[in-house]
Image 1 (cartoon, rainbow, N blue to C red):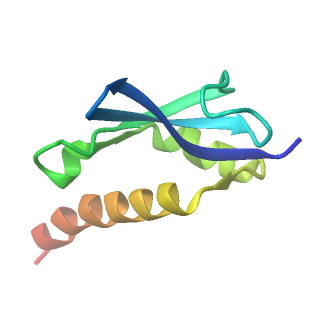
Image 2 (image 1 turned 135 degrees about the vertical axis):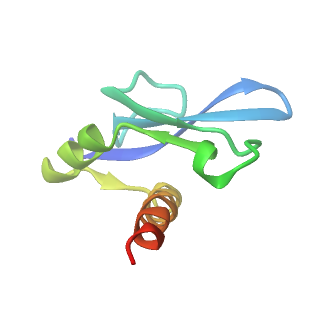
Length: 92
């Protein structure tokens, strides 16, 4: 079966919190994931604090052929841009 990387909702009603998980495509929204790769808190104050990601494990799953959802792909790209931007500003 194909593996996808997607968000899995947790948290209380009206206080959403999400996990980034590697999971088989056929599993339901509350199915057991193969691995938890990080978390996403949309209510976080700073953009850098919204997404916590184990980047090495995320990239390992991509190399194995896992496909990220559109939402996860966008979140990860935005997080990588914000992480790279401060480092680029420090270099003269």
